[in-house]
Each structure stands twice: as C-alpha cells, then as structure tokens.
Amino acid sequence: MTTQQEELLPATRRALLHRIAVAQAEGRTPSLVAAVVRDGHAVWHGARTSVEGHGPDKNVQYRIGSITKTFTAVLVLRLRDEGVLDLGDPLEKYLPGTGAGEATIAELLAHSGGLAAESPGPWWERTPGSLRPELADVLGKQPLLHPAGRRHHYSNPGYTLLGALVEKLRGAPWEEVLRREVLEPLGLDRTSGRPLMPHAGGWAVHPWADVMLAEPAEDLGRMAPAGQLWSTTADLARFAVFLTKGDDRVLSAETVREMRAPAAPSEAADVVDGAAYGLGLQIQRWDGRLLVGHSGSLPGFLANLTISVEDDVAAVVLTNCTSGPLPAGVGADLVRIVAEAEPRIPEPWRPLREVDTSVLELAGQWYWGTHAFALRLTADGGVSLEPLSGYGRRSRFRTNGDGTWTGLEGYYAGESLRAVRRPDGSVSHLDLGSFVFTRQPYDEGAPVPGGVDPAGWRGIG
Image (tube, rainbow, N blue to C red; front, side):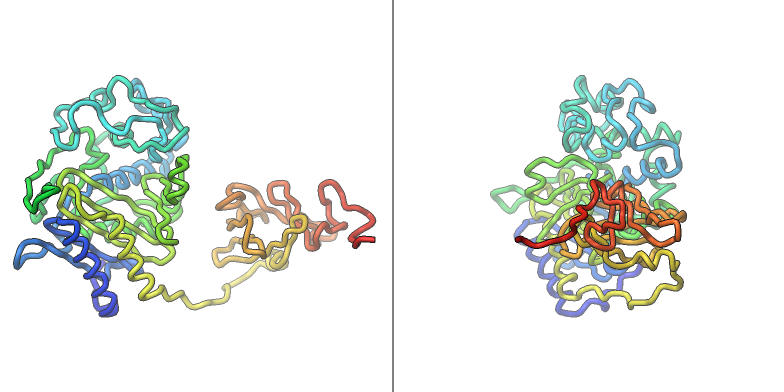
C-alpha cells in the first residue's frame, strides 16, 4: 500500500487537516496522527503535535488498546474456517475449568458471554501482567455476571479467554501466532506487542492545567489479547483494507463480512444510539452512515479505526493522551469529509458474461399475497428479492447450483428459495421458506395456501 496524497483534492486535504488540528488543540493532546484509506490504499496522512519542529509520521507507533481485540477475533475465525472449532461450541470444550465455560466462542467474540467487564484486583491497565499470571487471576471467583447469551456486556477478560483458546489450539503463544498468521501475511511489520522505535510516549494531561504526567506502559501479560498491541497509521490503514475486502491468506471476504454483521443482543439504549457489536468489531450508525471498526484506549493512548464499507473509505486516528479528543468522532468525521467531498465513483455497468435462461425467466415482478416484489439477477450469479414499495423484507440469495438459492441477509437469511414448476416445465410459483410468490396477486392457478375465493376480485355493491 502506498500513500498517494495527490489523489485527494486540495480542499479535501485541507478539511481533513483542519479536523485533526481542531481535535489536537481542543482535546489538548501531545500529538495526534491520522490516515484516510480509499479504494484499497492510503490516500492521506496527517499529524499535529505540541513539539516544535517535529511531527510523527505514518510509521510512528502508538498503543492501540482494544483494537487488539479485532486481531484476536481474526485468529479465532481462522480456527473456525479451518474446521478446528465451531463458533457454537462452549468454551468448556477446549478450556475446561475456567468457571466461564458455558459461554460459546461466538458469545465471547460478541461480548455476550456474561463475563465481567474488567479483571478483579488492581487496575489491570496500569499494573504489570505478572500480577495476573493465570486465567483464574484474570477471571476472579465470579467470572459471570449475566446469563450467557442474554445481553451485550463488554468484557476484557472474555478476550483474554479467546487468546488462551488460540494458544491452546495452536500450541504457541498468542503473539507468535498473531505475527505468523496475520501480521506477516498482511505486511504489518510495524505492529507489535511491545513498542519499537520510533514510538510515542503515553501521557496524562491535567484536566485543569496545561501540564502532563507520564503514564506507565505495562506488559499486560495474560490480558494481552484484549489490548496489548502497538501499531501505526500505515499498518492500521492496511488492516482496514483487509477488514473491508478480506485476504485469502488470512480470512476470506465472506468471513470478514461475517465479522461486520451484528452478533450480540442490543440494549434499548444501543438501539436508540444505533450501536451494535459483531465478531470483534464495533458497529455504529453515525450521521446516517453505517460505520464498522473499533476504538481502543490504555493509559496514555487513545485509538480508533473506522470503516464505511459502502463508501469504501476508512480512517485511522491515534493519539497519546489518557483522555482528550474523541477518536471515534474524529474518525467518523474524516470518513464523512472524504465521502461527501469526493463521492465514490461506481464501477462501469457491464452486462453479464452469460446467463441461465431458466433463471432469467424468473426475473421480474412477483406477489406474496398482495405485496409486490421484484426478483433480479445479480452479477455474482445469485438473485435478489425486494419489495417494489421500497419497504419490507428484502434479501440477496446465493445459488446452490441445483436450482435453489439460500438467503444471505435479513428475514430470509438461511431460508431456501426455489422455483416450483408444473409438469410441462412452466413456472407455477416461487417457494420461499413456505411462502408462495405468484406472478399475479393470489393467482388462482397457483397453490396459494388457504385457496382463492372462486368469486374472484370484485368491488362493493
């Protein structure tokens, strides 16, 4: 990936610089670095700093805190894709005796396993991991605060368990597995468990005076899979591309799409806020735009990775203060600035290379009762079904290669769609999870459940 700043218009670059300058000044942070990704490569890098004559560049490391969790989730999903585990498996199957074993792998990934938010004992982010050498020290005597699977409750110990799961099944330390299976294939050579020069120092800024206090940079030990990593805007820009498009050396596009889908029960407040959590990724509706990614914080550092898949724009924001600017808000603004100032140019329309005539004859208008739908062929060989009113159930369907399709999203996810033919080969109706779709509303020539009134359609009187 190369940085091609000239690809953005001068006015767009100035707007991006203005946004991070305001964040650094009003947030009172020693430094702030940011990057924007578009169309699969970094197109802008910016930095603001309180040090005269010096500005951190795209290769300066900052601690990224809980963005580490997304990396850990990638390792777990690799195990799933290899068939080593199933996301529905309880943790107890692989790590017996933790006291949290009833939670499934999927629930731990989505923070819905019922575990406590933090580890008992001294503030784990500011104390050495040697104080918590065993999983029992991380979990405490009461690991579960809620019934597994019932609610989203963010849990750092939950991702400690997932890191331990990776170590158990790979037979190697978490960081070693991460480097071999994710960092090296993606070219993230400036992402590491311990800081490598050049790196920023972490600071606390006094809330009522413009003075600073150095923060400790502890090795988190067992808690490392929840927040240990250091990285750069350049590396996280590459990681953003991976989370958007996938990379078969690590995870397929289908699996990273699965990571981006909501996977945890939402609280009422989350529904109002438009927030959800996938498999190692935060999901947020922000100013009408669907954003995925993750934020991170550790004493002395704040971080954010924000992606708008629809716009194919991502942003990275890193800063070295304990509290100050809101990186998630800055990241969302950077994405918005580029997406609105320079909207994505769609690929040229091209006709299909080939089409199955037996599928083509299904295209067009169908009725479920009196609700009108349109079935369209998609470029990937599947079909889509959507209401003509613009409101209601819609889904894309992948072909199964046998004249049936499986729903990919929404109400029809996992449901089977098939065309039912008459003895002469003509199409009678569509069957979608037992729903009958006909070419005319309540077509008397189709097996409409409950039958069709023989008196037919009529007015009043």
